[in-house]
Length: 122
Ligand SMILES: [Zn+2]
Image 1 (cartoon, protein in one colour):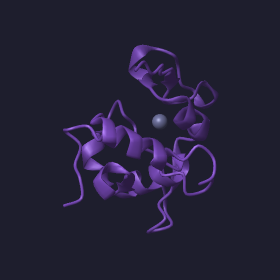
Image 2 (cartoon, rainbow, N blue to C red):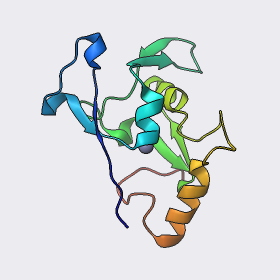
Image 3 (spheres, rainbow, N blue to C red):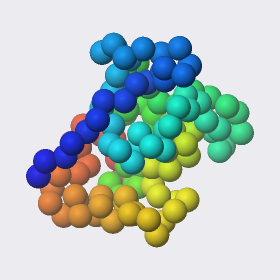
Image 4 (tube, rainbow, N blue to C red):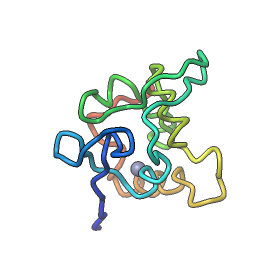
């Protein structure tokens, strides 16, 4: 299986960012479109505005955990929760559209998911 991942600009050019390697990250089209040019979002638990996850500066495992054997991503910090909300990482806003949860169930069956190093709900 080949998956094409575009490079996205972490700090958007519209907010003073640049397109050098240290400001770029791989992202799927879905996440890139939902991220748009947002760099912050609301933590649904505290209602505070916090930065969204920066894959160049932060570690995934410190902000997220897989639930339901890898079907659902849950933010474990304000940054993780705000990122889940901003990117709708579990397709809760538009569940009828290309549900990522169905895709993850398929990946789990194939053994491709979740990544072995990622934390999971125990
Ligand atoms: Zn994605």
